Length: 376
Image (cartoon, rainbow, N blue to C red; front, side, top):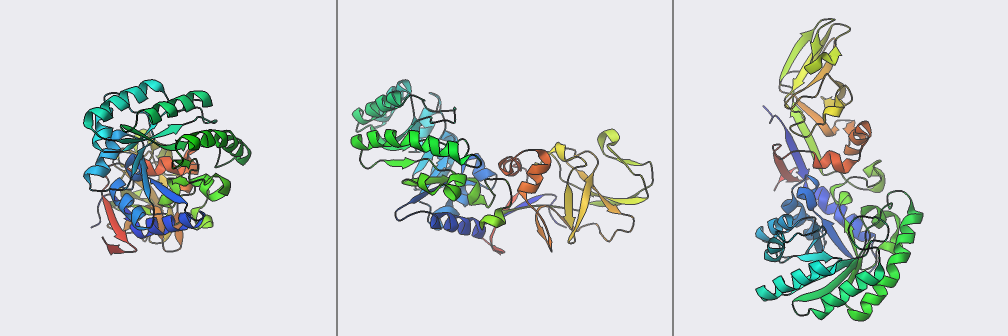
């Protein structure tokens, strides 16, 4: 009998996606694989190893604890923490020997003191907000003064990078290009201070759609996992989805007209039919918003998900003459014979993006790693 829920991750697909993304870069261009949020739900450490094996030279995460996980796993590639680091998190970041992102003087002063006390040198990337409106300062002069403070704090700190992040690379390329124009003079000013620094701006969408944004390094997240950053069809971009999410048919029962399935009776049979129950639910990452709003692939056919998605179970309508038996594999995301259901298709049903669908697959779902079918 299959596991109640299983996420299979093809590391071969990860490697080929990285190879494809690297092929978009010019000579000397570096690829940073973003493995935050547990590798977008795929597992940060296995994904990081696969990405590095395929030629990625840098890794990126969002938090200090994520950086420490990679360090404790024995990974030695440079790891950049993209997010804010609080005073309480700073020791963890330094213990991970991570590169960090800065944009204000207070943090730089605190970082310099902590790094000096450890007798270590910490690489720092200065972030300029060119239009996303989240982290980073909008004022290039402020960012320049932060960079100068980092430079002056040598050897405790090293001015290692200049960075920004696009708001619309998956859509409005005109605004993304405007962001790049705002970023260019800032990079030039920092290069005068630290000629060897790495300039980077491009995410997955910009890597695929805006070649002039590649600079010294690109930071690819969602495309590494074989999902389309434009939330359409990854196969059209040559990307291979790495994750398959499956369950199995745990029960099959008859439903007469008027009988219901699930909390709140959101499905009431209008005709004689058979229902299959799958032991997977929103506790595993199947959004409750997919109630009466999704398909499941069983035996190479699509069956509608009916009734309310509960924490541990969903129900599918098998029709009046089912050929489905207890124990059969049921695919929620992946390929079954000629049928295919992608994270993007599920995202469209939810009014969201594939990122959220993938990250939602919870930790109680075991991950099984393979390389094109061979266990690793």
